[in-house]
Length: 370
Ligand code: G6P
Image (cartoon, rainbow, N blue to C red; front, side, top):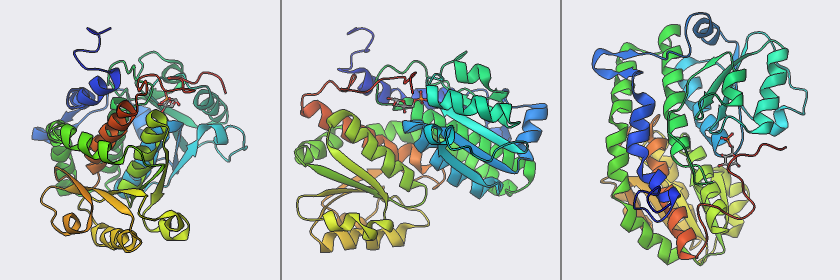
């Protein structure tokens, strides 16, 4: 397996480092930024029309895939003006949801075998909903049950904690949103072209973010003995905070909570003291000024702030205890980049604590039982 790991100590690290390539693979044959074109061969003709005319899009998923769904909610509502709901598959399947004709369900699943997601879409399909699959494993159960869809093409993911599948999901969900927006006419040509260009640049920016590995490792060493972590973000970066916290829990067994940065004052702020590391996902976007004041709120209570910021940020550098700078990107695609240092942070803390990061205790790669 040393060979399979391609020289990396763990599959997780290998898969984190594969992301410039896997994201490129997710875009390949679909994005032609130079000519302003976007094609999704798996969502065509009648399914493209049904998606465009959907009354509502419901995203159903579990775990990390559910976090990708949350980011997609922000993207699709902004781009397409179609109402989006994001559901935990395990809740959706049991609560007798109102679903039927006119609803398009997007099932997001790396494995395509997660039992809760599979059953959730089976019953929605029987009730007349259209199912689109966003799966990584070709020919998987969820992919086969779907009417149409788009594969993520991230290649086999071995590490139990999902990394490259997540960023591939974000990219593919963004392509879906852009396609619908273009067809619905809810996006200007200029914004459409700008986002195609931004997508095109992602692999390179992710490669740049991966150069932070050693810096992130140093931050990991500094905070690895913390008992709890708080992860905060706003807007597109709020689900990134949730995913950062989940990664840390999964492989380092440190209790971590992700929260919308502003909602923090309705509870988690009570936990803040000089022993609590608070990770802010605070890249430059339309929420920037707001999150700066959230950082000040944490510092006023002596919390330790680790901030993921945009390159060249000087305001937050002065406030935070530790700063990790990532390349600038449009806020709609920024999660693909801001998530990279959080994957690395979880990885290094897990490794420093001596845990088997590829096979964390109690977790399964694919949960095929309910
Ligand atoms: C398990 C895995 C997670 C994954 C979740 C959903 O809990 O450990 O990494 O996010 O299942 O899996 P799926 O294959 O449906 O994306």
